[in-house]
Length: 93
Image (cartoon, rainbow, N blue to C red; front, side):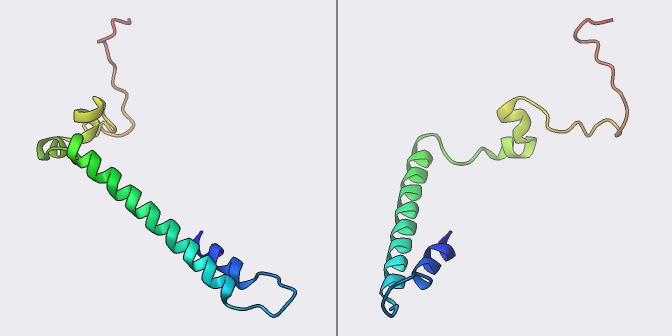
């Protein structure tokens, strides 16, 4: 990641005495990439917020996102662990 990008400038092999020039270039490149990633992420977040929103409603959050968004239950905590619940809703006998 970022540390590796900077250390490339530190451990560069040069035929002449190494200077801080390469480390500075690595820092500029790292800063440029970080700034670009931040700006693009911010713009995407603003666009999403203005169109479909970034948050769910408080009611959906209270009820649980598994049910309200996905229509599923993540955990069935109403039955004790290890019990088998027979489901006859499928008509299998």
